[in-house]
Structure formats: structure tokens, C-alpha cells
Length: 431
Image (cartoon, rainbow, N blue to C red; front, side, top):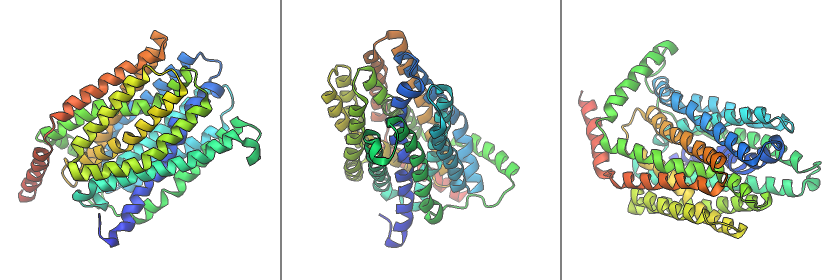
């Protein structure tokens, strides 16, 4: 870990996961799928609401796919990772707070604000991910990334637990009904996200990039740098192979996050039980992410990620046979054990496979790959549910994505990949 003088910046950076995980937990995985089906789109058939929810998620991911690399390159040119992060954060929290004012039956407006919230959430993560190289040394990437994800699980879980109590007992909080409680929770998420972003903005250092530049010159430089990066990444075959593997397996992870609650609803499980399952995932995920950080430091990130993928394969296979809510609880525990770990170690592994000085740009690629994957997964689930009429059939593509991702990751030579990055950096320095 960093020296004591650097721990404030590390914690400030890690607390951004605490901040924006409220959106991931309360909105994406928790209340929005349920509230969309039962309040905003109650007149739509279940398969249609699942279809529209999947399409909204895919649309947000596609927008990030098209913009993430150039935004990352531009942030590197301007030395503006924190400013870009702030802009996307403002978009996300304003869209999330805006859901409070969307009335019953107004599902197109709810979807539009949800899409904007997803853009803010995923866009801000590009620049938060890139800042890891400014707060810790490479030897500490695994533990630092896992600490951030663990704080995200804990913070998101605590806030979600409070809002679940508010929804279950609205009269105790002076609210008219459950709908009023859910709508108020969206405002609460926006406030939480705003407050806990402040430590990162105030305390996290940022490399200067190329210094002060005119915006137009920076844009030209960003496109030029992007073309150069395409050429350079071809010199890093293991980095490219990892991105390809990540494309497949993170698609499965994100699709489970997006669609798990909706899947439980389609199977007829009560929404209160699904909220309990999400809480189980959050609070199991907090210590599990820390444990995976130690596993990654001890055995390396690649074997630990493969272990997590194996557990996901078992989870998806079991979910296809699920018939009781107790089964859902068991799967929630299993997902909690690996979800934070696979995300944290993937971020750490990629950070060790890229050259310094292009972190925002290359994490733009990283997030582009992840979000392009997320275009496919929810789309497949939504379409399969609509065409097949059986939500269990929709799980089959997810299983295939995990298996392909594992096979590709198995072929990544991490040591050779890191050596190639060092060689590339040395050549650039000599030039």
C-alpha cells in the first residue's frame, strides 16, 4: 500500500466507489427494475417491460462505446480526468434525482432519465478507473482496486438497507406509501453520490498530461493519440487478448447485474424477497472483495479471475433450474462472493498491462470494451425473453459468454504482457 502520506488520496479515490455504487445498487440492481415494471410501465406485459429495460441498458452502453476512447484521449491531452469525471457525475446525479418527479405510467420519461443516469455512471467510471495510476504504485493495484470495490459494496449496501426499510415501513418515515418511498430514494442516491464525490475532487492528485492547451488543439491531439494507440496496442498482443477476454466475461457480469431482479420478478418471486437477496449480495460482497484483493496479490489476478468466472458458470447453470425464492438467496450469496472481486482484479490487471501517460485513453478503451459487451448481453436477454416466452431460456447466452471469456483469458501471458509494456516504455524514453 502507499506510504502514510499517500493514504488520504487512496481513500479519497476509493470512496468514489462508495459514492457511485449507490446508483449501481439502489437504482440499477434494486429499485428501478421493480418500480419500472410495477409503477411506470404497469400497463405493459412483463416480457415487454423486460425488453425495453434491456434496450435502454444497451443504448447507454452503445453511446459509451462510441465516445469512451476519444473522451479518454482528450482527458489525457488536457490533464482533465477529474473534470471529465465531475461532468459525468453531474449528469448521473441530476438524472437520478429527476426520477423523483416522474409520475405513474410515464415509462418513456423514466427510461430516458435512466439512460442518462447510466451514461453518467459509466462515463465517470472511465476517469475514476484511470486515476488508479495516480494514487498507488503498480505493485498495489490489486489491493487498492479491491479496497475501492469493497467500500462500494459496503456503502451501497448500507444506503440500500436504509431505503428498503423506508419502502417496507413508509408510514414510519412520514411517507404516504411504498411508491413515495421509492421515489424519494432516487433523490437520496443523487445526494449521496454528490457528497461522497467531494473527497476525490479535493484530495486525489492528477498527472498534468500535456499541460494547458487550447481545446481545439487538444481534440486534434486526442484523435492523433488515438490513432497512435491503435498502432501501439497491436504491439501488445497480451493486452489485446485480455481486452477480448474481458469483452466476453464482463458482458456476463454486467448482464447479471442489470437483469437479475427482473428475472426474479418474471419467475414470480415477491419484490421484497428480491430486495433481501440484493442486500445479501452487497454485504457478502464487502469482505469478499477484500479477500479477492489478497488472492490477486498472492496468486496473481489471472487465476483469481478464472476462479470467479467458474463460480459464475455454476451460478447461471443453477439459476436456470431455480424454482424457489430460497434458491435465489443462495445465488445471491454466490454472486456476492465473486462480483466485486472479478471487477476489481480486472481493473488492476489491465492497469498493469498498459503504458503510463495514456491511462485515461486506455481506460477509455477498457470501458468501451466493457460497455460494448453490455450492449449485447441485455439485448440478448430482452429479445430471448420476448421471443421465447420463458425467462430461463434467456440465461443460455450468458453462460456461453462466460465460457468464451475464460478460454481467452487462459491464453493471456501476464508476465510477457507486462514485459512488453516495460519495453515499450523504455523505447519511448530512449526516443
